[in-house]
Image: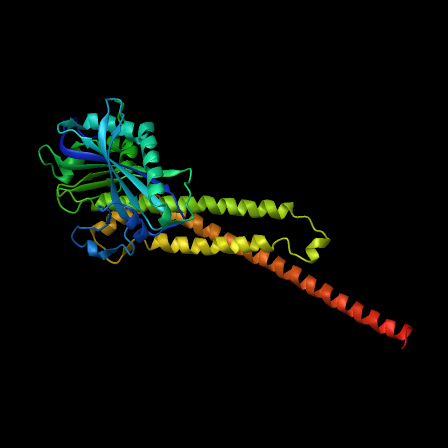
Length: 376
């Protein structure tokens, strides 16, 4: 794929959606959260044609956080902040950065490059999510704030000068450089350019979606936010699988350490050293099963149409199946480990029963011997 020709493309109406998604709880009661939020809180509802074939059994709740200043190299800008809550414990902070009419593609690439790694943006998102946690504290189970988060950026264009078609835009604009935030003058290698833009979709001749692992470009003259919303859901799912993958790593490592630290002794005849560990492992497995069900049920596809194709393409590009497979593999390993621990507990219980039986036999013999030696 050759590099796009050098042309000047001006954005007439566009903005940049910066997502920072955090894991803040084991579960969020969305109805209770709505009661604690402002009156303008709303459930996510897709509006595009045929969107009824994507089901959201428990749609996430969004509410406005107001306008906030954000410091950028070119000067401070005012961004619109929104929070979105998911029942599986994730909270997403969305910062909508305006793009001034007449902005060139090159200028926007520099802005995107800064936003991808902006510490000011990270600090603002963290400040906002802390406020969200306080506001909905009564609606969460297992509150926490994982030290990792998921970031994603969507460049959302509604109008571009000349109203180019999707094919014209793809051929003329350097979308790969924009998505990478590559502001140097050195041309990208053709294979890199193709790798960045390989997941792309168009429904009509005048809309275009290009999905990369950390960012996406959406050209949507209708103004529909359905595709950014689906990308946000996919990122929230990715975060949850990453979170539970780490939790499983920690639990498996702790089992290994505790088993290695156990030392046999006479007390183990009366209480298995693995009983509490087996109980905790079973609890982790139950929690994990509930988590996987909530995440997988957060979005259901019942038809093969455009929005479904975009979502499935995003899932592949974000490598969600790989993380899901990792969680499943460790879940199976943990289940096998629980079986071994349960077996040790059962063996220890059988030893206790054997000791009790032997003790009863000895007691009975002693009583019988006493009656013989001490008649009357």
